[in-house]
Amino acid sequence: MEFESIRFILIGTTHGFINDFLKQKEIIEEVNPEIILSEDMQDVSLISKKDYIKIIQGKKVSEMVEFEEMRPLIELCYKKKIKLIGIDFYNFGFNDKLQRIVKNEIKPLKKDIKKIEELIKQREKRHLKILRDFENKSEKPILVLIGSWHLRENSLIMKSLKNYKVIFPCDKTGKMLIKPSKDGDVHYCTRVKNG
Image 1 (cartoon, rainbow, N blue to C red):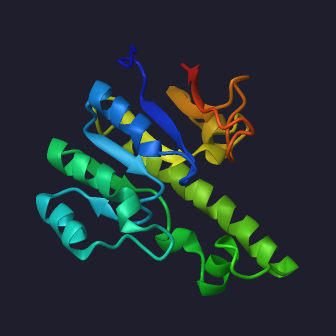
Image 2: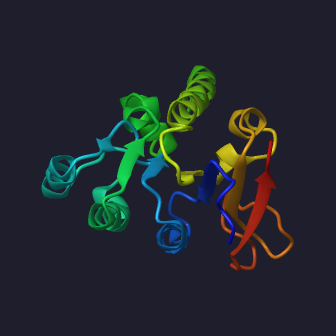
C-alpha cells in the first residue's frame, strides 16, 4: 500500500463484533506509525514508558471499555514505542444512566435518546479537533482507530478532513458494516480523499 502522501489512515472498528485488532496490527506493521489516535482509549494518552506501565499494571481504561479488549493494541504500541492517544471523553461522556442504556440494561426515555444524540455530536467535534491538533505532528501517516459509524461519507470527520485513506469493514457488496453482516462474511473496503 502507498501511504506517503496520506495524512490520516482511518481504520473503522466494530466495537467487538469482529476482532478489530487483526486489521489494526496489519496496518501498524505496514505503516509503522509514530502516533495512533484511538476512540476506544477515550481520554487516556500513552506517551511515555511510565504511562504504558501504569495502564498495564492498573488494567483499567474505563467502565465502557474493558482493558482486555485494548490489551493487544496497548502492548503492541508499547513494544513499538508508538504514542497511543485517546480522542474521546471518559466513558464516551455517558453518565451512569446512559451507560446502562447503551449496554441495553435499561430502556431509554425520549430525553435520554436526545441526550445521547447531543453527546454523539459533541464526541464527533472532539474527535475532529484532536485529529486536527495532531495533523502535522508526524512525518508518517497518523493512524486513527474509530468506530465505523463515524466514517460514514456524510459524517463530520469525512466532510472536514482532506487527505486521508479510510479502511473499513464491509460486506461482500462493499456496504460498510455497522453491525454483523447477515452472512457472517467480513471484508475490508477502502476510500481515499486527496486534497
